[in-house]
Length: 232
Image (cartoon, rainbow, N blue to C red; front, side):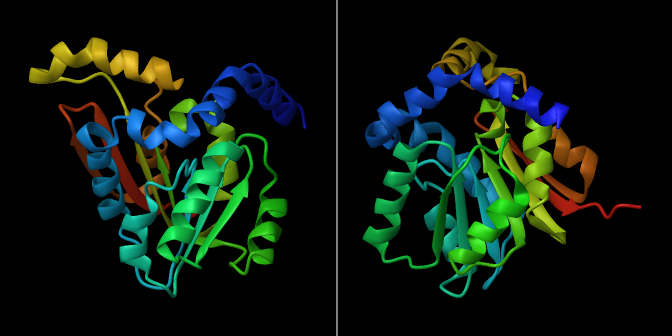
């Protein structure tokens, strides 16, 4: 209880980020640099996660649903996407995207990954005709926004089956030839509220097996995916 209270306090310190995403939700896809930069990470992340037909995938911090088209190609109509985001405005855009494409296999839930109770969320997923546990989880550019990534990881994995796969796509300073782009990368992260030093993919390295690794855009985008390690 003490850890959850501390997580709640850290999350309450970032209301401006939540308000920012709600305010700019209708314009997010245009302003986010998606296709010149960040779409490449989504493609590589979903390739590494490798969900298959009929599986249920958690999309953590799903935003406006930019992962949905790529996931749909993998899981098909028999699969399910469970999109979780703390911004009602972003979820409205995600819902519009799903309705416009006729995707009836998308469940959208408003919740903060740091504060949520996995049991309660599992019940809400079931109420939306999904399974209580999912086969995979994907967090693209979302864990670096969260005040307590350790708690977010715990809550996320609490919604997964024992042999689930987990994928993380996030950002760091560019490397090598792309170092000169570092000021732009840091500015983009600062505007979005992300911590460019967070390296949330390290959780995959430490807690998964058969880890696949990739990078893009001069190392600015880091991709990891692996199978959850069995306890004991």
